Image (tube, rainbow, N blue to C red):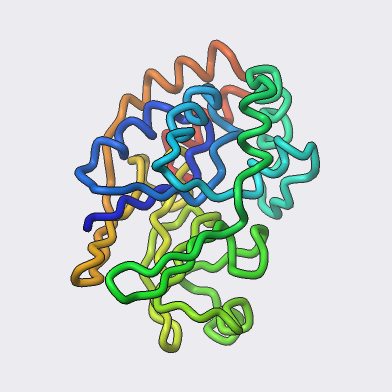
Length: 229
């Protein structure tokens, strides 16, 4: 089976459509459907399909519960500013969908135990990055019985072996932080346990025009998408 893994869509429906066009059998979404982008409604409604498991990200939690997103980096002011815009777009159905999302999903696929979550297994706010010291990662995954841990949150695509566990991050669909402007995703082959990190083109300029027309701080938001970080 080809499992399409997506994460960190952030209101970028054009990018979401691009990654969903990648050939696959099933999809799992690791969260952060909202904030930063112009079309949170379109992103949520595309992922309300009961056949697509979706995990709650820290931005989904911030929007649904009206709490801080817990972001600790230079773009936090943009997530805060665009949250007001996001609330103005969503109705009770959308808010309820975000509120009820699970914190993690566990599956056994072709004999391998897989844990899907947003940040780290112990917190949606923690970052596991390609260069996070191994001892810190081991602390974050302590007690987890899984062959594969699949995460988002950092917006940086990677595959990394830590001890006996393979950690997969598909990168960000709609808000890159790795210097690449493409929509990022991953395909996991459950038969041979291989991972392919994939970059997809989408109509970036159309999204930028939508941001310019609708959103606060449009210049900053557009430059992030055009730089890829």
